[in-house]
Length: 283
Image (tube, rainbow, N blue to C red; front, side, top):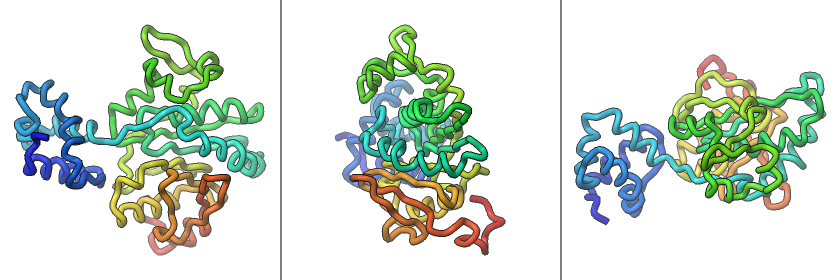
C-alpha cells in the first residue's frame, strides 16, 4: 500500500460527502486499487499525484466517485430473493392489481443492471397475458446506467448466474458480448439517483429491491433512506433488502415476513399516516 493517509482521507471524505458511502481506515488498499487505473489514464505516476489533481478537476472527481461506487452484482444473485419474488410477492399483487394490470418495480443501486434484467425475465415468464410492468433501474454512477441502457455483457459476466435457457431466450451475440433483447429493454428505464440525498419525484412502487446497499452507509443514513423509501412503496407493497440487512431497530414502520431464509419487509403504516406533518415536502 503506497497511498498516503492524507490522500486516503481526502478521497474518503469526498466519497462520504457526495454519496454517504463509508471508506473507513483499513480500506486504503481498495481505494488505491480502484484509483490506480485512473491515475495512469491521467498520466500521473502514482495515486497520490492523481489525488492532488482532484482539488481543481471536477471531471476527475466524478470519475473517482464512479470508480468507488460498489458495483458487485450477478444474475439472479443468491437466487432465494427471486424465488420469494415469484412465489410470495407476485401472487397477492396480481390479485390486487387486476384492475390496472400493471406492476411498478424499483431496482435501487442497480449497478450494471443484472438485477433489473433478472426481474424482467421473471416478469416475462410469470405475468398473465395483457399485463405490463415497468422496472426503474437507478444508480449514482452514470457509467453503470450507460451499461444498463446498452444491455451488453461479457461472457465472464454471463457466466455469473445466467441459466442457459434464459441466455438462449433473451440474449443475442454481439461481437464478443451478449445483448439483452428489446422486449426486456423496453421494460427497464434508468434514472440517476443518489440514495443519500432527497429523492426526485418518483411513482409509487409495488416492489423495491434495495439489496446489499445499506451496509455501506452509517446508521443515520440507513434510517433516512428507509424513511424515504417508505414514502414510495404501496401500502400493500414489498421491500427486499440484502441477506445481512434489516429494518429491525432502524425503522418501526416496516414489518417483516419470512419466506424461507429471505426476510421480506412490508409497510405497517401508510406514508400519509407516518409523515403527515411533512407530506408536502420532497421525498
